[in-house]
Structure formats: structure tokens, C-alpha cells
Image (cartoon, rainbow, N blue to C red):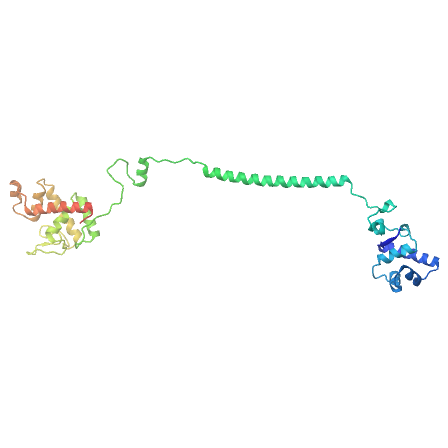
Length: 314
């Protein structure tokens, strides 16, 4: 059996070296002769045996084993450390120890089974992930399509909650603006306060504003020619107790109190206005059923103001 390579570990090389030296000595050979016969330089052969710092050449080891006719048992070499020319040609040697054995079918079957189990595991994992995704998507869809119970309120509850009033009354829902008379010397805030005074005494706002318009032309500092009547409603301070007749709201408050007392006597609105104006013909007009121009104008003008305020057009 001709070797072409021989790999030796440290322990095997020490035994291999001893065997080689004995064979060379027994045959009466020299290192020079051996180097020439195996086809290597003397330096390479000396280094092979003497230099322990470097790894040994597997080719020189194989040539020495062939030249000195050494057997593997001589250095206890492992079979897989040998490589012959027959191995190079993939031809089995006569010694069955050096024949490369084929893997057993059992090992191949085991690998196939493990591979199949691996594929099955991957398929199961992918199926579980897909199933979980579909389940979540279905749950989200069900959540969107789910119908929730509706809370229905009756009209009575809505009116009570939104408007604070009972249903089926005269109130019409909407936005109400406090319309006032524009372009007069009485501010909107003052007009609203005058309206509140009128409501507190049961008088129409338009009627009182018409009276102020006729008496003073909405001038809170007006004074008559005889210097006896003052303010917006031309109160006679001789008969009416008022601290400041030029204070608009105080003047209106005293004047409406007086007018309301005249109306409450029951002789009608014409007689009450004539009496307020100081008309000496008020009683005769009442007896003769005569409507004075003063009273007629105030009543007509008051109705006009109320209509204009209701429509928002003045």
C-alpha cells in the first residue's frame, strides 16, 4: 500500500520518529542516502526529524513510511489519517478499515423525517397566524356592524330640557331680539328698562313711547313754555313728587304710575290721556263721546310703534 499523505499528531510523530530511526540504523543507511532515495533535500529531512517547532510534512512522512516499509501499527496511526493513491482514485483498498462507509439508510430516513416535521411545523405556524388575523378582522367588522340601542326622547322631554317650558303652550321656539326704536335720544338699554316699567304696571310700551314722543319729542331735559312741566313725560312738579324730573327712568316711572291710576278709574283710555294732559274738556268729551286729537294721536301712534317693533321694521 503506497501512501501519498500521512498526517501525524504529536504523540504519533514521536513513535513514528523512533521507528524510522531504528529502521535506518538497522539497514545501515544514512540520512543523506535516505533523502536521495525518497527524493527530498537533506535539509528537509533533517528539519523533519530535528525541528520540533514546526508541523511535520505529511508528504515526507508518507515517503518515509513507503521507503522503510512501515505499517500503521508501527505508529498507532488512526485510519482516517491515511490517504493512499487508491483513495485518490476512489478505489477501495484491500483493507476494509480504510474503506469509506456510506451513511446508513436509518440516518437518511431520520433526516428526512426531521425535515418533514420542520416543514409541517412552519405550515402550522403560518396557518395559526393567518387564522388569528382573520379572526381579528372579523371582530373589527362585527364591531362596526353592531347596532347599539337608541335612546329616544319624547317631545315633552325635549321641550322641558331645551326650552325649560312645558309642551303645548303658546311659546314658539326661536331667537327673540329685543327690538327698540332707532334714531331717538333714548338708548336701547334705556328703552328696555322703560319696557320693563311698562310691563310691571300693565301698560303697553308703544303707548308710553308715543306719549313721550308727543310730550317732549324724546327729550329728557324738555321744559314747557310756562316752566311748570319738566322731563320726557312733562311732569308738573307741583302735583308730582319727583326728586329729579330730568332723570329719564324716574320721570317715566312717576308718569306711568299716574297714567295707570287714571286708567284704573274706568273712564276709558281717551279720558285718562286727556286728564294726564290736563285737558279741562276731558269730562265733557267723555259725556259727549268725543275723542280728542291728543288722545287719538297717542293711541294710533302707540299701535303703530307696537306693530313696527313686532315686525322688526321701524
